[in-house]
Length: 393
Image (cartoon, rainbow, N blue to C red; front, top):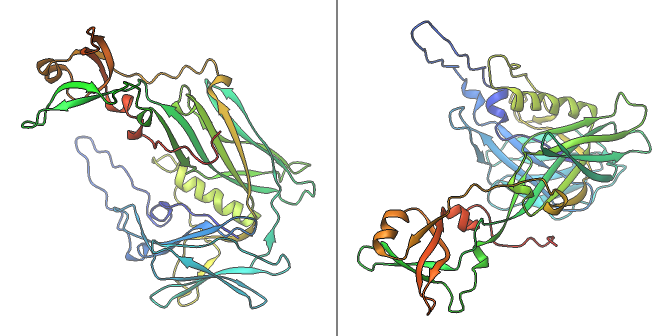
């Protein structure tokens, strides 16, 4: 069972299109007069996984248009109900998230999501059947417009899926532009740097600030349909990496998640995609009213932001190395200067910079001058984490 929502969707679907009024000599502020009922609406995010793996549902409440945030919904009771009378509880972690390590569903039974909030209201989704999701055949890529495009390849031999959605998590290793084995020595009175010295007695490089990783989850809605094709085969782009991006400077990995969805959810997500990704100017499509399949039993007139279906999740991962892209030409564009190892020089030239390694030394390895650069170019932990992922080669 899968629930897909966008955190900022409520302020688009329930708001009015902000109109820019241009007069000959002045600008006039436009107040869209947002009604009170656009705040405090229940928003449901995540998916219920009928396949292998954990399930996490995030519940929150919409706030005012000016806040652009969601407030977690605490102390709710969340469960998956079967038409056969079965009920599977999800457990809260105190931050608006409710999860279970593994759902066990009967393919012959229809299920729905049930939510009981602390204020006594009850919300349910429509009952639905478990949907089969075909496996991801492969993940391929090719260079396009100096960047790199990643494609999902899948097929359903029964020709029954027709509608697909993809999500992904991308992780990449990156390195600082320069090695670092120096540290500043600070004046105990002024706390200003007055000299540099080696971090370690054997003068080895500090790898904890040189090698890092970053992980991001997809934020856009990626859909595909084979409705107009004679066979249920998809070959569609799911991600594009900009030219010369740091993501491909060392090693990049994409973990792709694939879901089978119904025609109704496909239309629902298409409207959400239009409202959240294309809206932005007076020439873009206006927000459409989108009705999901989650309802408030306590107050049938109350809007709920959400759509629930039953599906399994298929997962596949790909790695792409910088050695496979010899002409990628990533350039960190870092400042790199030499500074004399003297208080006055450091004060004049070293403000805002970090030392890297010695430029000139005396016969006893004393540091006469050193190289320095901006902190993000020396310390990768300012932009990522120095913790190798478990799945990293």
